Amino acid sequence: MDANLLARFIAETTILRRPRRALSGYGPTHIRYHLVSPIDDMKDKTRLREGSVLSERPLILTAESLKERFEGFGEESREAARWICDQYRDLLRALEYKFRNQDYQASVLSDDVRAVSGRIQEDLRSRSANDAVLIRCPDAAWSLALMKFTLDEAARAFPSHVRSFEEHGLFDPGAAAARREEREIERLFAAAATDAAARAELGRKLKEFGLFERYEDRFLSLFR
Image (cartoon, rainbow, N blue to C red; front, top):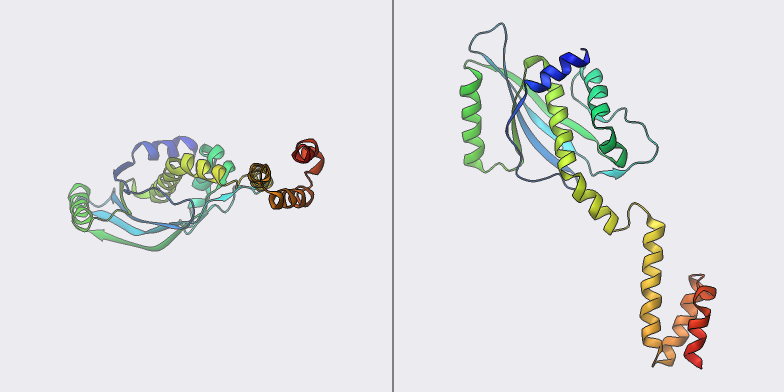
């Protein structure tokens, strides 16, 4: 498939129902999907594809390439995956998202796509299925539609994941450790103003952290 055809397939894809919750940044997320497609050579027939996408916990990227980011999306999905990954290159370089298609099954229903979609919508509403998505897409482009939707969900969750990872120091563990050491030193300085035991502990910590020269004058002033 060329890029123009892939773009046309995307334009013909509609998200009829989105999951109510975002992807988790600290554990796996399962999204149950229902893909409905009219069948070109079979009037009033709809192909229904169902399964679940497992989004693994996002990891901070090293210099790893983007290949093998999708698993289980069909034999013909490799070219579509390359095109999709190129569109979302910035997202995939910042955090490593990996997705696995599971429990895939397909069936042909004797009804048009509008009626099938309506029944699925009603069923999902009645069960409060918060982790489910319903997508209408061309029959030949189901894997493309599913991969794009999955990456759109990752993009939706991406800002909160980055913010949370930054707050926990996960992008730079060394800097996070240094901040913890600085907080410990400042706590001991505050206590050392009136507590001799805290001054002794402060001296030990400054040497342990390799910070004695940096704080030497301030530390010695406690004894004047």
